[in-house]
Length: 203
Image 1 (spheres, one colour):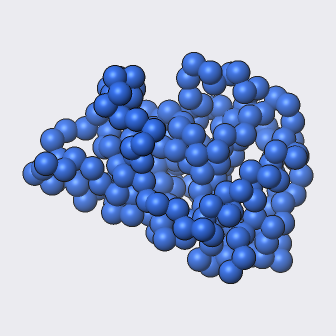
Image 2 (cartoon, rainbow, N blue to C red):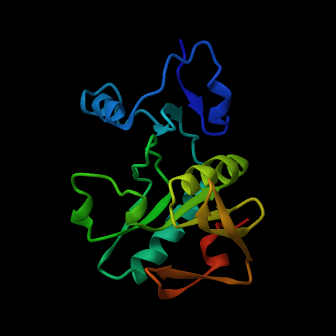
Image 3 (cartoon, rainbow, N blue to C red):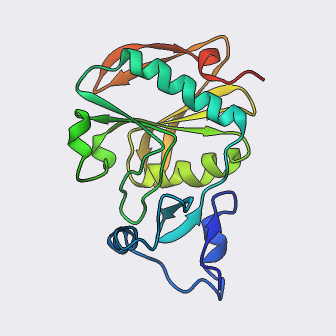
């Protein structure tokens, strides 16, 4: 009996699956973690109540995660935290984005995960999961009102900056190519500019 989907397979597809028993709340998901039912060895996340398998990473994906991490660690002010592949808590979901810049020092999240109001910028790095990250996760973050979502697109070698979440979608999308830079703005303050090419693993 399989109650797991994969991120590459849209979650909507399993809603009518007779083997998908029921959805879980965030609180129930936490209880399964606390009880050891789900452990660090289980590559899953909670998306709209469904426990979903995470896709394994290709080398280019891991390389870009490292590049983003290295750059942000150099420029972030002390009142912001850098979180890499760590959970965030939404209404019915607890995804683990590739990179999140969250308001507050590291100790702010010792007893809870960041929520949408805490997030300055959220980033997903997409190769094999491009369509899923753009369509499904983009909509998920928009519905939760995550203010800014970057899709680091390794397939088309660009960064898509999604802002102004409203009515379940981002109203503004700016696409930046390898010869351009993307501004990093936190609480209305420009922290710096990042070369798009610098964040993309080599083709």
